[in-house]
Image 1: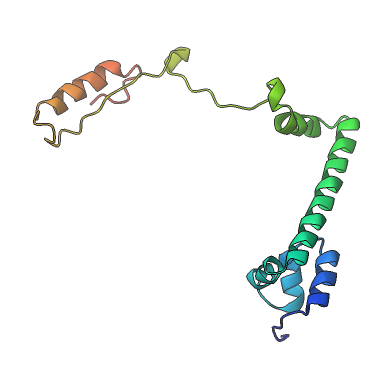
Image 2 (image 1 turned 90 degrees about the vertical axis):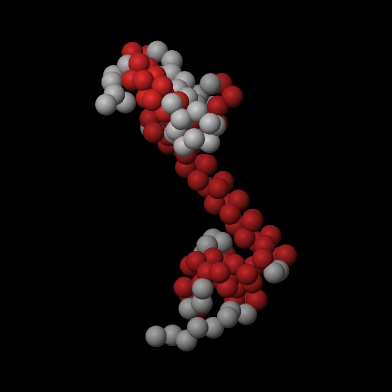
Length: 141
């Protein structure tokens, strides 16, 4: 097993370029932790800018591949693009919640009957209310 060592600044620059900014890959190369490489990078403005630049290049590459897939008619790519970049035109995925048969959800107030408000009978009243408000009878006895 190789001994852990901290790469020199020059080695770190070259390794980051080879790994396309992937700090975990650089750490594996030198047998040290990803956190240690990340600390070395964050302590050096030039290294921080290098990793940012490398990340931007990879994002550009990924976007180019996405555009190629869109041009080839790949449905997943069209859908992904619209969900991410078409939000301003209404292309969003959202979850709609409704009650039974599309009716609005019922607002139900629940008092746990802990006697905090001085009205101990309220728990029985709330149980009756829940039974009346439950369209499917889920909350019934």
